[in-house]
Image (cartoon, rainbow, N blue to C red; front, side):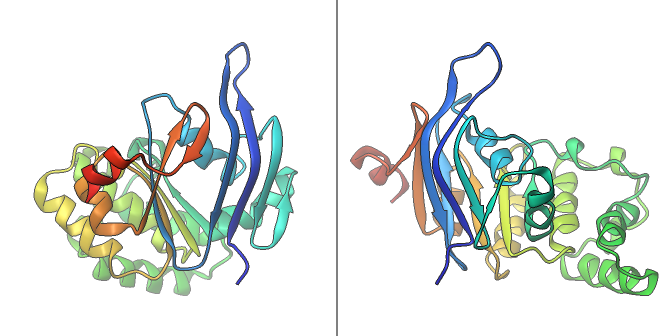
Length: 226
C-alpha cells in the first residue's frame, strides 16, 4: 500500500537561525498511529507545518497521497485531506460561536447549506458538544476549546490527523473523553506529545526528534512508555 505521507531528507532552518530539521525521513500508512516526542524547540511543530505546506523545506521532498508537493497549489489538496490541530486552540477558533466555527471549514469545501447543517449537527452530537453550539468560542475553557478544534477538523473528514500536544492543560475527565474519541475514529494519526500515558493509549509506534532527525526511542525511552 502506498504511504499517505512520505518525507525524504527534510532540512529546514528559520532565517538567521541554525537548522531545525537536519535530514528527516518519515512515512505514514493508512491506519497507522505514530507518536513523536522530543525536547522543546526540537522542530516537532515545524515538521507538521512542513507536511501541510505552511513551511517549505530548504532541502528534501514532501510527498502526500502519492504525489510530490512543491508549490502552494500542490498543498491545497493536502490541507483538505490532512487535519492539523494546532497546539494552541486560539490559533484555530476565530468565528463568533462554536457552530459557526464548525461550519466555516465545511463551506470552504463547497458544501451546501443543508449539508453543512447536517454535518455540524452530527459532529456536535457524536462528540457530545451540542451544549456548546451557541457558545462564544473565546469564553470556552481550555479543554472545551481543544475538543471543539478537534470537532472542526473531524467534521471535514480528513484522511490523516496531526495533533500537536493535544493534552496540554486538559483535566482528567476531558483527557479521557479525548482518548475515547481518538480510539473510535478510523483516521491515521500522528501525535506530538510529551505525555507517555496518553501516547501508550492512542499510538502504536513512537519516534523521537533529536538533533534534527527522527529516530526510534532509546531503550530507556522504551521502558518509560511500556
